[in-house]
Structures are given as C-alpha cells and as structure tokens.
Image (cartoon, rainbow, N blue to C red; front, side, top):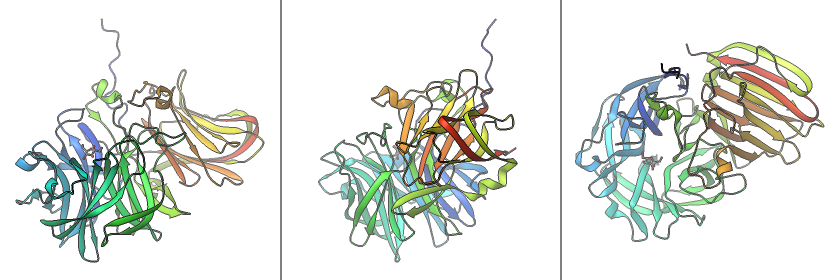
Length: 477
Ligand code: FRU
C-alpha cells in the first residue's frame, strides 16, 4: 500500500492572484486598459511547469482580481521569434491594441510588433522592427530585450533593457517615425552597481509630478537590507528627457523587500490610477507546485496602486479588493506576550494591525501557524526594522542566493514611525504581501504551509502593547 496521501493539486493555487490554468508563467507583459477592460499578458510555457519556449498568454478582467484566460496571444511560430516571444508592453493606437515584444530569432534578441483587437493578434510582416544591428558599439547586442512602448507628444519611443560591454546594466532608447521605422536615440540610463548584469523589463511613468523608472536588474550587489535576492527590482526617481534620450536619476531603492517579486510593469487606467503588477516569484528558486506535479507554476502579485511621497514609491492594494471581504471583524486589544482569537485565522484574508508604540521593543504576528509551522512578521522599535521570516513556513524553498540564511529572512528599515506602526497583510493560500506604514515599504513572499496551518497570533516582547485589528476573510467562491 502506498502510504503517501494524495495531495489536492489546487492546495496552493491562489484564489485571487492570477495564475495560468496550466503551465508555467513568469513576467507580466502588455499590462493595459484597452476598450474598457484590463488586459494582462504574461510569459507563458503552456506545455510544462518549467520555463520553456515562451508564448504570450492572455487574460482579461473588469476589476483586476477576477481574470478570464483567453487564447494565447503570441506563439513562437515565426522565423523572427521561433526561439521565444519574450517580454514587452502594450499601448493603444488608432483603436488598435499594439504589442511590442522581443522576438528571439536567428540573429538573437530583436524587437517585434503585433497588432490586435483585444482577442486576436497578428505580427507585422516587417518584423523584427528594431534590429540588434542598430545598437552602438559599447552595447552587448546579445542582451537586448523587454521593450517599453511610450507615446509622448505624439512621438513613439521604445525603451529596451540591455547591458553595456563593461558589464553594467543599461537601458537604450529608440525613437519611432512609425511602428516599423525606428532609430537609436541614446543610452537612457545605466547602472552604477559594479556587479555585472542585464537591466531587464523597464517601465517609465509619471506619478505625483515625478518621473519613475522601474527596472529589474540581474545580480545587484546585496546590501544589509536590500537586493538580497538572486535578481532584484529597482525604482529610480528622477527626470526623464525622452527627446534628449536621457534619464537623470536623483534617487533609487528596491521596489519590494520580500523574497518573490520580479519584472513589475504598470499601466494607467481609466480612473487615472497608476497600477503595478509583478511576477510573484524569483529566478533560480525551487517551485513546490512543479515538484508536486500540480500542473501550474508561478503567479502574479496583487495589483497595487502607486504614488510618490517624499521621493519614495508607495504601494497600496487596489481598492477593488474590498468587494471580496466577508465577515469583517475588529478588535481593540492590549496584551503582553501573545494574543489570539478563535475567529482570527485562515489562509485568505486582508488584515490590518495598528500597534500603538509602547515600552515593548518588538511586536508583530505569526500567521499560517500550525503545530510546526509559522510565518513571522515583526517590528523592532529600537532599530526601526521589519523582519519577514519564512524559515518555518512549510515546504522549504531553495534559491541561487549565495548566503543560505538569506533564503529565509528578509528585513527592511521603516522611516518616520510616530505613535503607531501599521502593517497590512494580504494572504492568499500560498502567498503573503505586507504593506508597511501605508505602503512605504512592501514585502512579498510565497509560502507552502499545510492546509491545517491557519492560526494567527499577535505577540509583543519586552512589555505590553495595544493594537487595533481589522480582519476580513476574502472569498472568491
Ligand atoms: C525577465 C526575463 C526577461 C525576458 C523573459 C523571458 O524575467 O528574463 O528579460 O524577456 O524573462 O521569459
């Protein structure tokens, strides 16, 4: 007799984070609002749960939370993209949905265009429209991908990720007279980090009168708190001058200080919101849903609304999530040691806790608690640092990071905590996203606890603390 209990293939499938019905996904692509609906394309290997020949999967939504998967938009079926349809973006032009992506073909990575109506897409016959041969001498033509299409003052631009021959990640800008007529317009921005690596998946937008560049740099040099993952995500705040082909950055930081966050992409919706979504995974990591044969691998983060305050990027879960709250509960408590309540439990929830600063030196909570499992968020008031510890979160995860400890703990310093420390956690079966101090910092991570690990436990160390707790389960049934 086989004593291994068969596992439910959907035990880790999120309820409201996008996953493909089957197969592997990575980067979000072509995230856009077109003809009244949200469109999310994604790097997709439909025939397996590991990275493979890249297609563009496609899904649409009315509220960014319930997604309907449509037929695959782009397959690697042409000479110029037969080794893969890599990442890219979308805009609307003359009522058409314009996709620009990287075709990996006989000459390597080159930029291609496809036009569609929100359902069917056809590739331009004159692809690739930007050839690697158009790059200047000091750029590595083998690493040339992930175009961000921009229209400014009636002019077309494409910002593309690459690497300089001296090893530094960089972005190059092209100017378009038409979708099939482009010329090189400059090295837009380049890394000052000494670790070599491609700058992948650029995005550029304006929010609160600031220009923000999003980049996913490979292999940044790790620091005490940031850039601890194998690859990182970075935002740069500065001044973009597209007509001059340059970006002057006056500050940068990591976008998300957790474990699983890569290749973010944004769009502006009909309400004027700037919304970001990212791949909720990291390259080089073990993937339990692949190892367990669950038939799917990879998910997107919750879409997040962006703003800039004091030159820092703030992230807020989109308001639409409130429509899925059920059984809202509220507690105002004071305690020392630990505090639990039988109704405070679950694996899919939206939880906000406001700790009033007190003599306690550390406070926080454990979630997904079971006999041997817990996932811990804690705030140390002395150092002002938040810690996310997933070393006991369930199925152990391994990554390519050099420091083995770094695969289980992430930390982030929080600025300007006054009378209250505020933490919002959104959990969805196998993930948790922390929005700290109204989104000044975020930490995202996947976790694979047992189904029975549903406990939530608040704690304080070194004295009593009072806390206000708002808790709603989330239901998408
Ligand atoms: C980033 C990335 C992109 C590339 C795609 C391939 O995660 O490496 O640079 O276009 O994934 O799937």
